[in-house]
Every structure is written in structure tokens, then in C-alpha cells.
Image 1 (cartoon, helix red, strand yellow):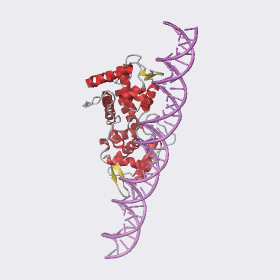
Image 2 (cartoon, helix red, strand yellow):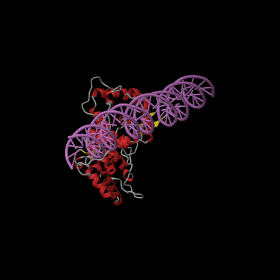
Image 3 (cartoon, chains in turn cyan, red, green, yellow):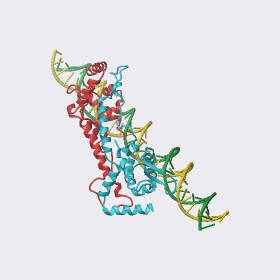
Image 4 (cartoon, helix red, strand yellow):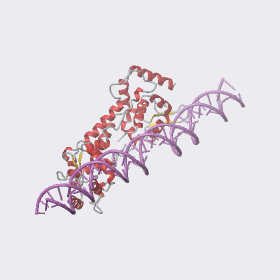
Length: 162
Length: 162
DNA sequence: GAATGGGTACTCGGATATAACTTGTCCGAGTCTCTTAGG
DNA sequence: CCTAAGAGACTCGGACAAGTTATATCCGAGTACCCATTC
């Protein structure tokens, strides 16, 4: 089981976007430069965020991306779902309906115990992810980050946003 | 994010093995037949369970697999880890150390907020999986399964174990 | 001096190659069992 | 009738392909800005 790298990139991008002044956009090129990741591939992830209603896009010169709603209303779970899809990690293939013990016509309304346990665990995972908003993560980063790095970041933003 | 099919197969196999009399083994061929899955590939999953200390193997004629310890002491988490590996689903690439804001020499002892949140969520997932043992799942299945199917299964077992 | 039209540069978006991993298969090494021959 | 040796068949285990997904890239469609031209 593995989450794609796009999840990490997207989460960082959304956290960054959450601290921008309202209305200001940042292009995929700039976001890729700031995070030092392949620009074209990052844009592909941002596309998913756009389709998922997490970010809005502004076309044309000086265009880019901005959050579609306040950072305090976007959770980590929202980002993960937008990038990875809403499908469950565990997929039940209903093994119990196959093999030599199968009985024609028998259907089970409830999921089998294994699938049920798996899905309860996944719900616990999702619930935990939903507890963190982009604003929370941005605040946490602002506190934890080295002051010198914070200053360099501020400087860079003022440069590219001018 | 996706769990491999091997997880489902392995969980079902372990649940089956947990209800066998002590010492009795079931071959990969039989387990594959019972679940209607590709035999050679199922054996590959059972290999991982063997390497993970979940099941023991008995070679030679009338050999096969059996649980390495009581089914009440094997959790769903044990099986998932054996098949999928112990690595975390989310991997932090330390983006914050790259890009134009990086400061030479700066290291962060604590994981970044995003990674921390991800890993807390994964722990919640694991804790939930660890709450279910193979014996629990087998009991649940015994109650939920259609009586006719149960009987056919019993019949099949008596046949292949004789 | 102000307005307007066109060119240009920059943006996102989807279609297109490459790499990695999951899925699926095969054959060899090892071991228990059964048979059979001998005492 | 009992013992023992050997052949056989069945088992697991790792090495070997095929298909699917994730990763990375490129080029086209569209839009806002800037500048030159005109009134």
C-alpha cells in the first residue's frame, strides 16, 4: 500500500495557498519551483485538485491557482480524496461466493467480516485526516520552521507576487 | 492508494486455517481451490506469510500450511504487514529542505506537520486492524454464513483432509 | 491625451511516452509416503 | 509376518514474463496584458 507523491506535493501546495492574500494566485510553475518538483507533473496533480473543487484556476497571463474556499474549510482528507480518488483501499471480491462451498442463489446483504473490519479501519484513518485543515498545517509550519528559512520564503513570495 | 488482492486472500486463508485442528495442514493447492484463486499466485502470498512468521510450512507429500501460533494471537494487522510490508503508506520526502527557501545546514528533528498528521492517521488505521484476530473473524463468518454453505464447506474439508 | 485593436507572452488542460509495481506463471529442490523385495 | 530400502508423487520456494498503474513530459487552447496606432 502506497500513497502517490502527488499527495505530499498537493498538501504542501494547498498549505502554501492558504496563507496567500485572498484573490492572489500562484502558477504551477512557481509552485513547482518553490517545492523543487517537476512542473508539468505537479500541474497534473493540481488538475485533480481543481476537478475535486479544492482549488480554482485562473487562466491567462498572471493566472494560476488559488483555494476554492478558505483554508480552514479544506481538510487533509479532502486533498487525499481529490488526488487518490474516493475508492476504498481494500476491495472485497466476495470470495465467499466462489469455490466448492458456494450455493447457487445465496447472496449476503452484509459485507463479510474481513471487509467490514478493513473498512472500519479505513474510516478511522479518514476521520483522523479530516481533523486537520490546511490552515492548521500552515500555522504549524510557521511555528516549526527555522526563522531564517521563513524569511527567505517571505522574500521569495514578495518577489514572485510583485 | 490500494491494497493488493493478496491481503484479502491471505486474510481468508488465515481465518480458515485458524479453525483447523491443531497440527493439520492445508496445501496451497487446496486453499486456492477453496477460494477459487490462481494457485501459484496464492502460494506467493503464503510465502510472505511464512517469512513473516504467520504460518508454518510443512514440506513433502501431505504437507501444506498451518498457523504458526493460535488464531487468537494473529491479528489482521499482522497479516497486512506480512503481505504489504511494514513501510508507511505516506513517505515524506522532506520537501521543506528543498527549493528557494532552503537554508544550508538547517535540519528538522521533528517530522513536518503534514507527515505527522498522515502518520497519526495511519496509526489509527493500524490500531483498528489490530483489534481483530483470525479467531474473531472465523467466528463472525461461522455465524453469518448461510447454513447450506457451511455444510458444503464442512463436507469439502472432510473430503480433502481424509 | 485617450481609446482601441492586435500581437505576444504566459497560463491551464488533456493527450502522449517511460518507469515501476502488481499480478500471474513456471520449473527446480526437498521431503514424506507407498510399494516392494528380502530376511 | 516384519523390516528396510528405493522409487514416486506431492509439497514449497524462488526465478521468470505479462499487464496495470504511477511517473514524467510535451504540445495545443485560451486569456490577460502591453504596446502601437489612430482619433
